[in-house]
Image 1 (cartoon, protein in one colour):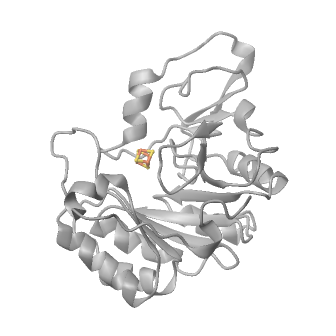
Image 2: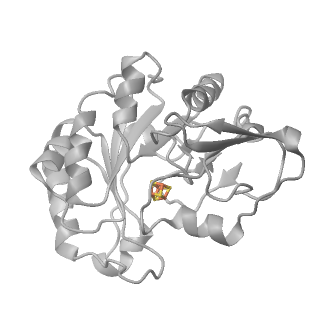
Length: 266
Ligand code: SF4
């Protein structure tokens, strides 16, 4: 169970960690490399399983203080699944250190997370993916959990992802939808993204790249202004992360959809 430094949620919950996407700016991978360790303490508590496309995935059932006992290999932490069951209601960012909807993630892991969401309906659950196709395929198979407290988000950093994101369209009926433009790596407002903001999402989060990577992208203020302008036009709340402070140069815009205002689930 974790308090979070992520400004737009009240807690993070990481029953799954690790990811096979290869985003060069990945904060989670950096943390896993720095603090993770392979803990082969008891073979009976660790099981390797095949991902959906045959990739290596791991299930662990032991308790450890190490948040990445299998480094960045996709890992289901069974002992974390019930972390929030008896906690007061809040906005929870689910799997901040993974992509729960990556192609490799076994359906059973997603089912297990959704089961816990159903068991603890006092919370809002916010998911993010770079692979919105998986939302669609789960939905088509009747496995995507719908409900007013389920918020499905997509992450876009560049124009190519903005085009791919279009396919999520209206799959979030009866659930919330949001867009995280983070880290913003270029002026991302393609026609597709404009359509998404206008028609399909209830909230837009914007953030800049963090860390000191060689080639790190410092966004232009104009890119941000364009997004804010579009959100104003369509009356979509905007949330700017701390990472935009220098670029924005004035008070950051911090808005939430009504249902996600901090404290709204208490
Ligand atoms: S999708 Fe997220 S967790 Fe996965 S590599 Fe990219 S930034 Fe890291």
